[in-house]
Length: 144
Image (cartoon, rainbow, N blue to C red; front, side, top):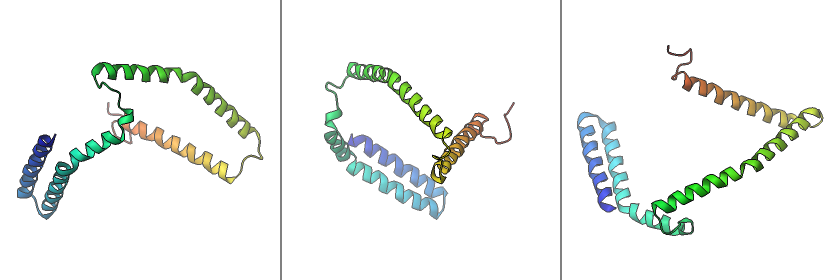
């Protein structure tokens, strides 16, 4: 593991020297920070990885092999598939409670109305953002 970090550090230093030769003071600052980061990763990367694995060893399934990963992926798929009916029922319960809220005028106060407006604006913003991305990041129209 350490050799890969050392290779990464060496490449970072080479790139930063190349950038510094062709750039100004901003590039020198960038080079210094890149060297600091690569040295930190080289020094602390292995210990951080070992500590992370030690803290989360209860979640690791032994033996760690391709077959185990495939089995876990299949279990996750079927677990999510089995949760669909519960989520479907929960969706309809939420929709029914929303219908009841819309029927009663007394339940509407400033807080509920502002929350509904905020959610509506957020939905519209996500829709509009998706449209812009779908058009190839143009606001006016599609490139034909």
